[in-house]
Image (cartoon, rainbow, N blue to C red; front, side, top):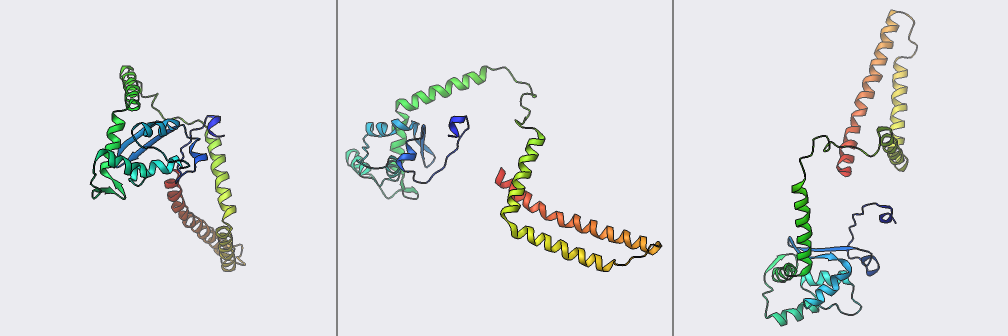
Amino acid sequence: RLSRRGRTIIFSIHQPRYSIFKLFDSLTLLALGKVLYHGPAKQALEYFSSIGYECEPFNNPADFFLDIINGDSTAVAASKEDHGPVDTGKVAEGNMDSNVVDLLHQKYLNSSLYQSTKEALGKVELGQGSKQRVSTQEHEITYANGFFTQLYWVSKRSLKNLIRNPQASVAQIAVTIILALVVGAIFFGVKLDRSGIQNRVGSLFFVTTNQCFSSVSAIELFIRDKKLFV
């Protein structure tokens, strides 16, 4: 639903079932830093069938592709018999057989899918090279929303965090009440004379300094949330 509204979706899932996999438009398979397939997800099974890897009946395509890359499927075993013995002792990363990865990568480089992708990228590079040098103003970072919109949503998010973590809020309120009682007891019954004025200045200085130092703890929250945001 979000994608139909024009949103860009970056989707990460571990072993997707078929009902989720069939929703994907484009599929890219990578192993050991090499592209094994890039193209429409619906054509992936047809492509692997064309290079000798048949998906077994009732098998999940996503699991089938992982099995091929890891060299665990019966399709890979059949392919090894067709292409001669393969040294399975060379394992580059995890369970991946580097010979299987190299074979699949080479087959992809010889496919029409790779050629069409290469041509499309070539056109993009030519288009970028022919463009005139853009001014620095066009590279200036702009925001889709104004300052007050950003302030509203950030404040709303912070308020939700406070509500969802009441322990921290209760602790802050308790500390503030205790501190207020201590300061109030120390400066209780201050007279309206010169010494009373000095005492009032001292109490205001103490409270202000305490508030400044207590707000320093927000820096840790900012650093943690900044990493999450980036």
